[in-house]
Structure formats: structure tokens, C-alpha cells
Amino acid sequence: MFVKTIELMAEGNTDELSKKLDSSEMISDYDVDSIDNDKKNIILSFSNPIDTKYVAPAIDSILN
Image 1: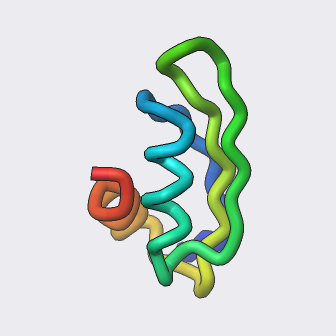
Image 2: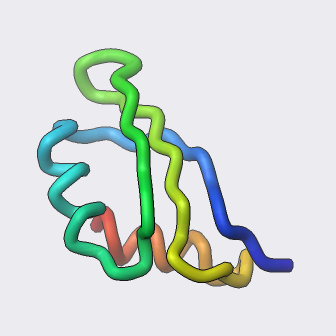
């Protein structure tokens, strides 16, 4: 199965997360909403559909 958009929660500074997402060629669009000081709700749209088994490694490599 392939996905084009995913929603996740991450910890970190909004500016740092945005900088990492802006620099990735895999991400075509994103939205970051603050839940509290550390937790962020992120909606990611990939440039191309990605196989579900590669979603976690891709996100890990982008947000590290």
C-alpha cells in the first residue's frame, strides 16, 4: 500500500521542524500545529506516493 499524506505527532521546536521539512525533497507540503511547548501535530504531504513500509524510515531521516 502507498500513502501520499500522513498525520503525526513530533516533539521539537516549530522553527527547527519547519527548516527540516523545507529542506526535504520528499515533502511537497506540510502543516505544523502546536499542541503544547514540545509536542507538534504535523500533516505531511509527500511529493510522490511512498510505500507504507518506508514511511517510518523516511520520516526518521527527515526529522532525525
